[in-house]
Length: 452
Image 1 (cartoon, rainbow, N blue to C red):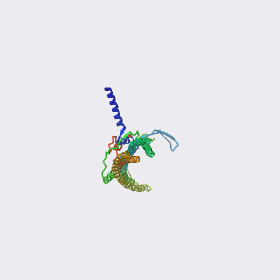
Image 2 (image 1 turned 60 degrees about the horizontal axis):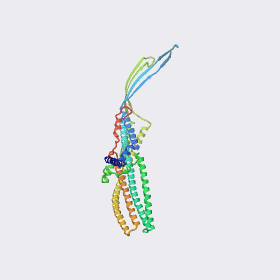
Image 3 (image 1 turned 60 degrees about the vertical axis):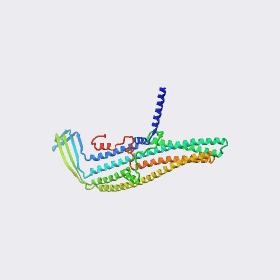
Image 4 (image 1 turned 90 degrees about the vertical axis):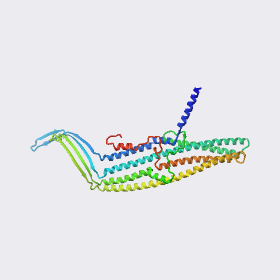
């Protein structure tokens, strides 16, 4: 008896575990998308490559140290005034250590550092935007798959119901209690229901294929509508404010505008002087046929003033000014576009909320209507067509309710993305979030080496 109980307990436990493993929330899917997306990984490597621009800019403040060594063979043949020829051989060798340090460059290095920083921060915003696009696409695919699955359940139930209707009508027809028209109507509705069920299964397979393509794993069998973990402001004014502060496209455009002004400063600084300190130490052995050893130590200050370069530098400044104007207009466009998008999304969300209330009321009314028509049909005051029509209306309302609920969540996630909050951190996803500062600080403080 105990062994049977233990066996049944194991079976029940396995059933529970399989049910848990086969179900998956939207946030589980988003976590997988975050961890597996090749686009995200590609953009992270791109950011880390751009981080090196800061290391290059900082290197201009550091000394340049070089070591030179040479060894060779020298043969000299001389003929004096009386025609006597003599030959001398020596093997010259030398080593030289040179150090060059810029003392002042009138803002060139500072401009290069500003260019690197603004480029990095713009790319960080691009990476955040890419992260949001990946998570938004994953949420849309999940919600479409969920809706397709729920619609398929309704289609199966409707098919089963209409199959029973068709069978019952067929039996009545054989008994002479139903007409051929009743039978044809029941059969037509049944065949339509079967077609709808087949189509709903096809929709599931398409969405499962999209899911696998993006996430890289098979879609779970059981899906659930999400519970929101980010609060959305209750009015458009606050949403617009957060959009202007957090939208990654606006942030990226803002840094690119600052970047363009830094490039103007950099181009203009090429017209300014520079001051360098040069130190060198040289030791040579048998440098020529007259000396056995030679030593030289040198220190010099180099002051350079660019007077004329054919107009190249002036052209560069003019070009950078035009690019700054372009980036300024791009920022204005992105701001206006983001504001327009959140306004449309806010209107859509308000409309969807109203639709959900209306559809839920319609479903309750249709459910009461179905029950009433069925009773009237049993007493002969309603036809079979009336029953089928009311059931079809109820089915369509339930399908519409699922679609509207799906669109509501998609709209919410789009609003969250517009505000710059659709990220692994803000969604509290169970992932190791990418650290923007780790590689940045590593290369910033690295003076030598290949590994960060």
